[in-house]
Each structure stands twice: as C-alpha cells, then as structure tokens.
Amino acid sequence: MWTADNWKDYEVIDTSCGEKLERWGKYILLRPDPQVIWNTPQKAPEWKQLNGHYHRSSKGGGEWEFFQPAGRMEYPLPEPYLPSEAFQLQAHGTFS
Image 1: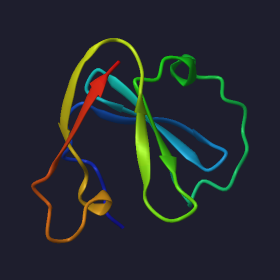
Image 2: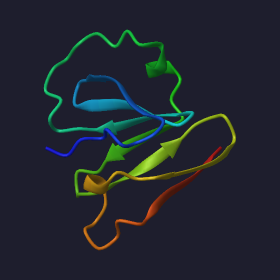
Image 3: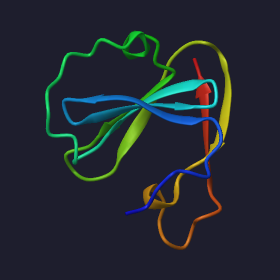
Image 4: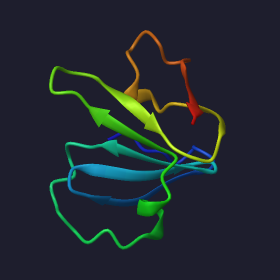
C-alpha cells in the first residue's frame, strides 16, 4: 500500500459514491476513486466548497472542471496518479 504520510497539507476529507474529497493545501478537489464503493451521506461542508472536480470519461481519462475562487493552482500530484515516466509533473489549473 502506498501511504501519504510525508505529504504536507494533504488530507482525505471524505469519500462517497465512488469519489474522494481531498484537500491539497488550500484547494478542495473531488476525484473518482474506484475503491470507494459505499454511498454514505455527504455531510462535510467541503462537498459544497469545491475548487475542482475531475470527471472521468467513459472512453478513458477525463478532464478537470475548476470553480471559484479565481487564481492558479499548482501542487505536485501523488505518484499513483501519474504515468510512471512523469513523476515530477505538476498539476496546473486555472479557476474561472
């Protein structure tokens, strides 16, 4: 199992309905997670305070939808979410 014990400013806030609600620094992101097979109540207030939501495509891959506040997000992605040859890649997004 790959653990996130050395990451600073990262937190899994909640999980439900096949998605994981995470905090990366000051940003709240929602991403699909196939290991989340439960449908629990989404009580954490962060469910309504998203900065970004990754929508998986039925054809593979997907795309980010970014929300307010306006600004630029830059944070290193965790290793399991990157192609093996691109471990130093960073996520970049613009909120609109």
